[in-house]
Length: 234
Image (tube, rainbow, N blue to C red; front, side, top):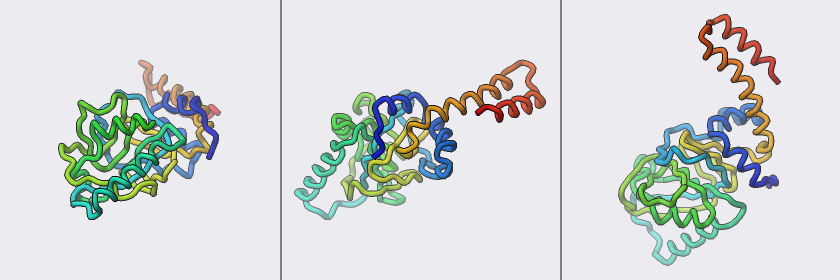
């Protein structure tokens, strides 16, 4: 695994997820149209800063009663928590709901799970299932979910550590996930250190155009001139 430091992570949390996606268009152009959420997810805490961490993946169901006995389910849940707690850290939970059109029928996430996961080094969750207990979740724990619902129903783990697909984003265990109120994106670990320079370049190019657009005498000719000047910035 690429040797990343906390300083690398801190740098990436200084920018929102759309800016990270913009940078990836430069440093990983093959990822331009893949690796990010493409469907709306609710974010109950839009004021939280962006998060980045290693994916901890799982699959759940809640519509139907599980077929395994309680001992087997407890053993699996314990194994899942051990997986979440294992390095590298920090982590982001990415959970796919397998109930198809009934996805989000019952909530895996609420006061208890957010506190457990936060205590095990997890920064937040991205799920196409649902969440609840919004007034009681762990402080600072970011959540992106397809919907809100009040009940657990029959929610249970199906599997964990496998590849999942959430809101159009395909994620494997230990993928790097950057997320904020806009959605989430998989960040290839081998380009993380290139992202700050790419963002600096993009910002310098955009500044020329934005300064022109905000000027009182802005017109189409000034736009053409600014676009040309931006293209010359390297």
